[in-house]
Image 1 (cartoon, rainbow, N blue to C red):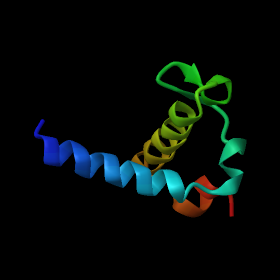
Image 2 (tube, one colour):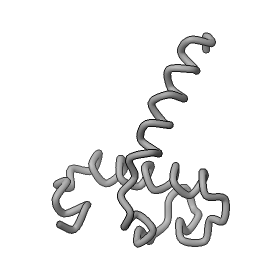
Image 3 (tube, rainbow, N blue to C red):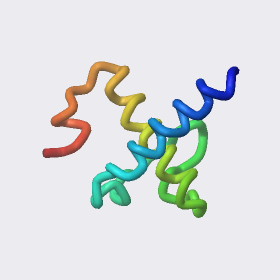
Image 4 (cartoon, rainbow, N blue to C red):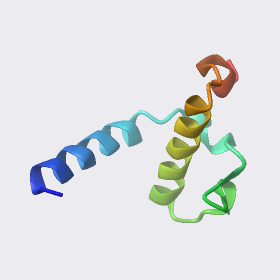
Length: 69
């Protein structure tokens, strides 16, 4: 992977990280075999929250249902 590509990916993750909903800590469940509520590193936990969101959307679940609005 080239440096500009890595920096672009990092920038996108940082933007998503800054936009995480304040209620994101209510996300529960397992992603990649690990319970998201048991992850102690804040950055890793936020990445797993995003991973779980993308996973649900990829399975066809409506955004409204995923966000429980």
